[in-house]
Length: 163
Image (cartoon, rainbow, N blue to C red; front, top):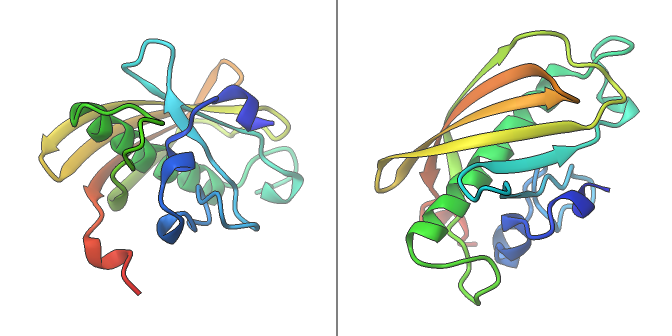
C-alpha cells in the first residue's frame, strides 16, 4: 500500500549488498519496507507507513520502537536523497545513491500515536559536514503531529558493504 504513495523511493535504488535493513531494506522479506522519496516541493522528504496490529504498545496505540525505527530509516534515506541531489543526480539516472548509517537518533514522543492510522514522516535535511547530515523528522498520524525526531546521518563507510 505504501508503495502507491511514494512512486520513487531511494531504497529502490540501493545496491543489493546493502538493501537488507529491517526497517527499509527492500530485500528483507520480514522487514517494514519503509520507502522514502521527495515531497512534492522537492525540499522535504516523505515516507508513509501503515502500522500492523503486532506493532501495538498497548491496545489502540503504536509501539514507540517502531516509531523510532520509522524516524531512523526515513532520516537516513532523506540524507541519501539530499546528497544524491547535491552530487547532481536524480533517482533512476543509473547512479546508485549514497548509503547512510545512523550516528545518533533522538526521539520525542509528543502524544500517543493511534493504531489503525496511516503514518506520514516529513523530513528536513541540513548538511553539517561533507559526511554528516542532520535530519529533522515529524511523524503524523493523519493530521496529528505525534512524534519528532532528529538524526545525525553519516555516510556509510565502504567497509560496511564488504563481506
